[in-house]
Length: 38
Image (cartoon, rainbow, N blue to C red; front, side, top):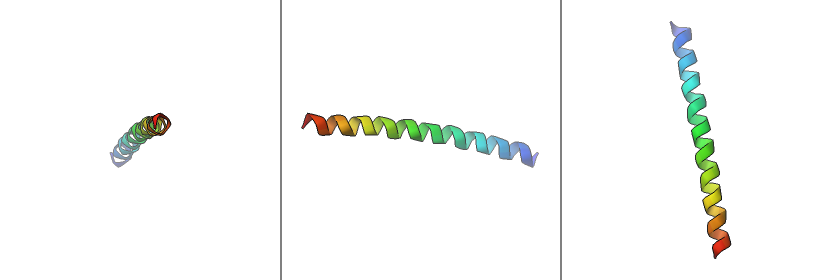
């Protein structure tokens, strides 16, 4: 049971990490576009 919960926690962490990376990439795009327009 503990092992199963650990696996689920790791899976959620992976998903959260990939979402963070997507947001970082998106904000980087917005940031560079904003700088280029000025």
